[in-house]
Length: 321
Image (tube, rainbow, N blue to C red; front, top):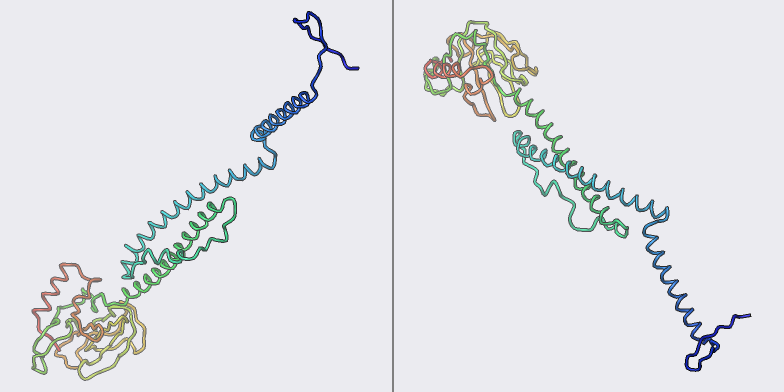
């Protein structure tokens, strides 16, 4: 049985029974209930931000770890890119310049990354921008490394070719300095001692005793080793790269036609054969069919003082052929 409640009426000076309006009662109850629900919901949202579910915590840790690793990778890519940039500069300004190769332009090194959106497939993910950025950086760096690798392969090939060329170009005296008596004549116009006509002397005459050894001045292949009416016993060596040397008036041939020789190999001996008036070696250097002054091809043998003395001697002396 419900407990009856009273209140004191001052006007009537008596107690009266309290009557409850049910509609107002239900209204107040509903408002209180609604307020409780709202407060509970707000509290739940705040609490959920502080205390996450295990799955949410794992996802957050993975995301934080991903961002941290991205920053590390991005930093390392920047460092690698800087190292590669320095190598590219040395490649263009030193290596390729030394071997007379054209430099590789910036457009060539970074070609293939414009135009179509090649990273569209990476769209639609939570971290698409991050993934696309680092993927592009890796692709660009990889492309540049491939180009640089090919360039270094080319440089290696050029270096080997240069080494072969330097070994082939005539660079030493065909007779040892200690075996030389003198330089009879140089590269100039002079009176031929036998024909008695003014004729250009295409080489240099080295006087030395008969049977003094004669050496190849550069690597090459013997294309002629025979006796001729003008040169007498003569050896002609093709060195490649357009170079050819002639060794004339030998007393005896040592080299044979078709033989491969190296700089310093014995090819014959000083003599007085052919159109010659005394024992000596007539030596010529040709490039692409044109006779050059041999005095410019002794850089592997002479000091500056020796070169100056040889130059003066070649200008003052008379030829022997």
